[in-house]
Length: 194
Image 1 (cartoon, rainbow, N blue to C red):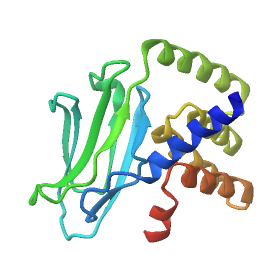
Image 2: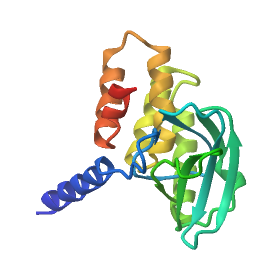
Image 3: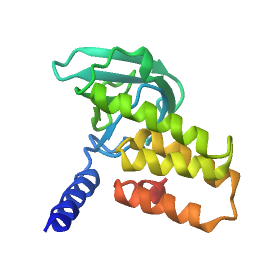
């Protein structure tokens, strides 16, 4: 019975990811509708159907207060979450909008900050993993990708999958694992359309 309950929970998580908030379809972020975030740098990408050249990325807390705001001319931004005062155990929202047309905005993505105990556990486990896998290798990237995936840290998992594939283009299993991951979090159609 526990297995059935566990599978139902996993299904609901994946179904929620597929039913992502898309805002208007002019700006789409390459993220599932909800992800946990670790206190480390992460890259966020989006695509836009408009000719805009300036985008604003904002993170809001549940009280609609800005905790992060940055303007960029790229369709990607690196955010160092360790430099933002995100509170453990709290939820935040991130969205991208055009600077010239604030009504042209992506859907909001929920960012969940793990609790202090979860963050401490992640740090301990990641340190152990770093000592067990070869440095700067595709297999290490796959180990970290699957670790982050299992912990719900999808934002951190994506670049590890991508780096593993870049390092070992001929290993089909890496490509398949990445495709399955994207399917699970509802982003497989995003890649097909872009």
